[in-house]
Amino acid sequence: MSQPRILIVDDDPLVADSLGVFLKSRGYHVEVQTDAHRAVRELKSGTSVDLLLTDVNMPGMDGFALLREARKIDPSLVVVMLTGYGTIESAVNAMREGAEDYVTKPVIDEEMLMTVERALKRRSLTQENEQLRSQLNRSLKLDNLVGSDHRMRKIYETLATVAATRATVLISGESGTGKSLIARAIHHHSPRKDKPFVEVNCGALPESLLESELFGHRKGAFTGAETDRLGKFLRADGGTIFLDEIATASPAFQVKLLRILQERRFERVGDDESVEVDVRVVLASNIDLKQAVADGVFREDLYHRINVVNIHIPPLRERPGDIPLLADHFLKRYTRENEKVVEGISDDAMAKLSAFQWSGNVRELENAIERGVVLTRGTILEPEDFPADISGVEATVNGPGFEFRSDGRTIVPLKQALEGPEREIIEATLSSVNWNRQRAAKLLDINRTTLFNKMRKYDLLDIKRGGKRRERPA
Ligand SMILES: Nc1ncnc2c1ncn2[C@@H]1O[C@H](COP(=O)(O)OP(=O)(O)OP(=O)(O)O)[C@@H](O)[C@H]1O
Ligand SMILES: [Mg+2]
View 1 (cartoon, rainbow, N blue to C red):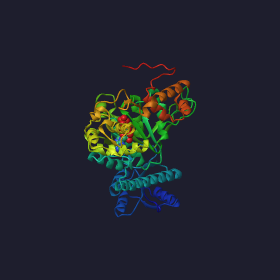
View 2: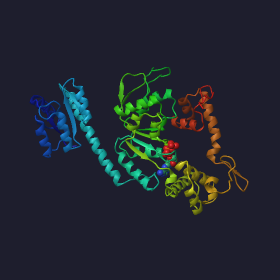
View 3: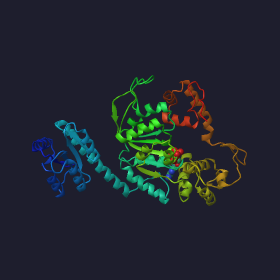
């Protein structure tokens, strides 16, 4: 960047000049004005200014009025306010009016310098974001997202636009419609793509663990807290946090989340000091949050906070035109993955797939295709390669996953065949380490998320230490 230009406005010429001399000595290009009206005229005349540094209390036009006028002329102008010592209220007002920051008088040189540098850095980041956004709009490359339904196209457009910003995004849609996929796409098309994408399933964590899992804790905060723990929010710093199944979040967690979204800061368990995070928050829900608000289980204020940008994914049955595209996409993926030669789907089978109601949405279609690819002995998928409820063909399926073929062989999909032993191994390992997931994951040489997902799949989450099942409320 060329030398940044700063416009200083203070009715006290002593303050204005000394600030001017100081910032000039630090390499900035500086203009000084002691009258706000003149400053406005200068901005109007087209003098390019990167940062406006203005006093609040000035006779005639005050700092707030100047801020508003200046923003009208150049909406991207960064404004820093100088406030009298102890007038924290006007500082808060300044931020509310859109000032980037404020400095209290008497001004300390180093503080001034830091504030100016920080404000300018933020401005250049915003400009980068804007460039990126227009690039994305030009070449909308969302390769792993399939579907050309007009509502899906709208979603891709929204996605490309919001990805470049830090706006909170709420993704809604039935189970299996692609909410997690969209959340990841937002991250990967954002300027944060090289920073972490951290997923949290809000419904899966017991209340007692949720807080330290998300916000971290200080060593010794509670029994068992042997070391400092960062927590997911800090691990996502600079990147994106994806809060899945947000409707199931407990009331206590909802309060915390509201605060983070408002202030971008929080306290770790056992720590009085609050920490600041720079995270982009993406949330998903497969139940209608508005209804959850009406039912009194979801905070209304939080709902408004998170419903900044809403992406609603329509169920698959409402966009049957996408079914053949998705079916082909999955056919290619699973023939590659299973090293099978299956060249296509017969017209008859495709008609059946298109007519089916897909209550499990894209996930169900994906599973059907995977299963068809794995089980078929032909090179084209026919209706009978799909479950009876889809194909209408008399069931050849005898018990889940077992298929008795006409040649008398019983074929079990490999995945399913391995599920039994997998569950046993996981349960045995967990039990051997007293259900300590971290240790179990280490022993099994898988990461904790994978372990967690498998525990969920095999219904092992509710098992208490000692191997007894916890009573589930009816
Ligand atoms: N438009 C799409 N193009 C390609 N694949 C898709 C599309 N939508 C969904 N999928 C695939 O379908 C499966 C289910 O999608 P995903 O897990 O994102 O759904 P979800 O809405 O998050 O479901 P849940 O509510 O159960 O969490 C995934 O394997 C995903 O890759
Ligand atoms: Mg999901």
